[in-house]
Image (cartoon, rainbow, N blue to C red; front, top):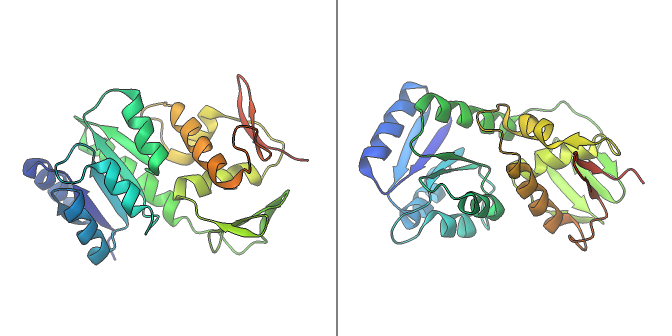
Length: 227
């Protein structure tokens, strides 16, 4: 069964172009013209991934992510014409998984979609829970618990934690984590990893400013503390 992609953009020409190209690539594509319409469509169609424009009338992309992330952890790729890094970072902080800057090449967009879907759908053979300190992660059920309490993570946050917790004490460079997460290096934006780490710390750390689990190794990257 083809994967369903929800294309959200206020420009009809963009929606048509992307929807037609995705259809040719074997996806099932549906569309919405703004955030409010996208919420309705997402709840009805249950897409496997959402391509989301940021600047839209009625409800912009940021507000859509705020609302939808309370309901689903569906992967979201932002489509943004804004060049400021802070705009991209804000989207990632809210729970988006990746972004593509307009104008974009359709081949790159599809490659990004496939990479994010691979992460979300990655099948892992039965294995014991990953445990470190008082954090447990089940790669079969996608359940994470910290101090016995369930924690809800986005697909990117889950994958990032799984990489780190599987090798406590090992230092991962930002570039290595980026490749593992995206499966590609179109834009070696290591800032993306920093944002996901910040989001992850906010969810699992008692005091994110003084992390107990995920340690920054300055000038190198991150590691899950082994003690």
